[in-house]
Length: 362
Image (cartoon, rainbow, N blue to C red; front, side, top):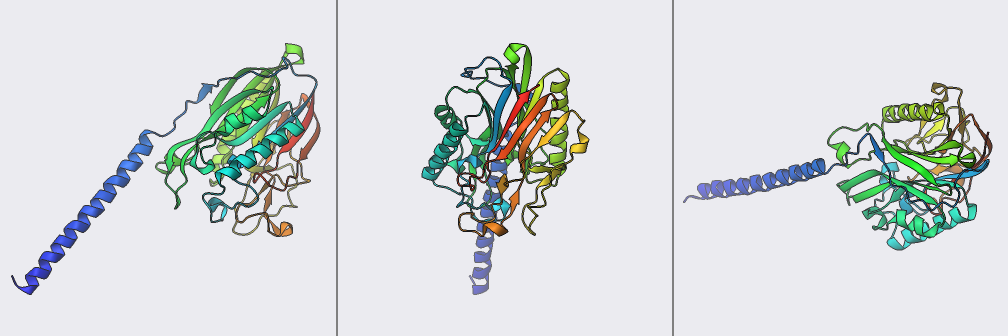
């Protein structure tokens, strides 16, 4: 065999091996995407939630204290940055740190001692929080609360970035000293298309109905966490669904309080003290004029409710940091708002500060 034929033979073998490798990779990727597609979390439009009633009160009194807090799955403390916000990290805390953050979060809840707690980003089985069941952790460290939980994120393996996020199972949790009579999960539209959709959140609201005024009236407690990383259309569509359900609950004769992480500032609130920094995530704006006069929009401007995760907070210049006001309450007009306060905890255990509101049922 001539030297030229030997080179051609070697080239054919190389190309054949290369083709086989590429084919195997393509098949593996297709199989993986297929697996995620088949196992994609597809909740029904409305699902009844399991209610664990440990609340000691059978009917709401006139005055109530409520807290909303995005706890950042116990892994977004003041030393964390996150790739989706312009940071570098995917894994943002050790298991020891997650447990420490969760102890501090539940301790804060006990200190405030609210009648109702709305929590977002509560992991139950996720690699990012080292598989600490935070829902159970909260239940075990806060006593005499009724409890509901709804998934809004379930993916067998989130494949991005590198290293990948991995398995995620998380949701929103509502605690109430009042006994909850019924609760349901209402699905919100997902703005993402296949295949991005299969590894993304499936947002929702939960409607928790409790007795008020000794059982003669109903109190609807709505927990929410709206879209974050969309072009704005997702937040708008989800806000519309939220508005329709709030109107429905109020027109049924209920007191209604919605709370959570809107990923939007209310248009009725002056946010000029927290200007947007160039190149960083920008929150949306919820147009309050799209709601009827039956609703009040409550955010506290004294302290920011959220900070950017483009860099760690602990050693940063606090005067030139990116802050947001995206956590708050929407309240029906038959509820008198007495006080709203964002607790300045220095983002020690979460990238959000809790917001506390005191109300009186009219």
